[in-house]
Structures are given as C-alpha cells and as structure tokens.
Length: 117
Image 1: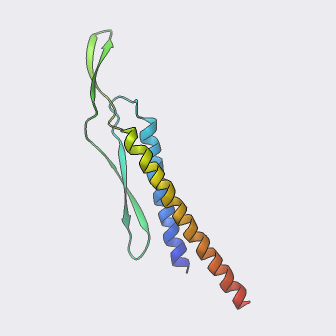
Image 2 (image 1 turned 45 degrees about the horizontal axis):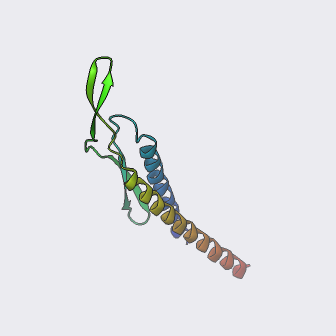
Image 3 (image 1 turned 180 degrees about the vertical axis):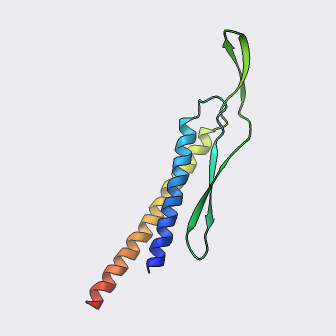
C-alpha cells in the first residue's frame, strides 16, 4: 500500500517541476532570445514518474527594433502562450488526480488500522 503512495508522490513532484517550467516560460515570454523548456514525464521502474527537462531550441520570431545604432534585427522568445495555458490546465488536473489517489490510500490505510485494532 505504501508503494502506491510513493508512486503518487513521485508523480506530484514531477508535475510540480512541469508546472514550474511552464510558469518560467510564461514569465519570460517577453524576454528577447529566451528559449522555452519542456518537461516530459517518464515512467520509472518499478514504480513512479520522473521529469526530464529539455530546452526547445527552435528560433523565436525576428523583429526589428530601434536602437541608438539604428534598426537591429532581434530574436524574440519562442514561447507561445497558446501552448502554455492548456499545459498548465492539464497539469492541474493531473495534480488533482494524484492527490485523490493519495487520499484514497490514506482512507484505506485508516480503515485497515481500525480493523486491526
């Protein structure tokens, strides 16, 4: 029974990392040259989930900006808000599902201890 709680906790930690990455991407949406990060979740053996963070190297859009030296071509961030918001919403639901799993294990363990005592 403890293995289920451990697996859910590893899922929660991985989802937290995924949420932090998305929040960081959103915060840097206007930072010139910023490259977004993506977190992929991978199954661990014998149980659990691990989070792998990678940088997405696709170039951002180019824009002309005026400087004291004239107009300069500047690469913008490659973060798309239309990608980040749905990712955050899905991560929220996954987080809720893992919390429910832990609550169910907690209730089962409580019932088992009540029966044993």
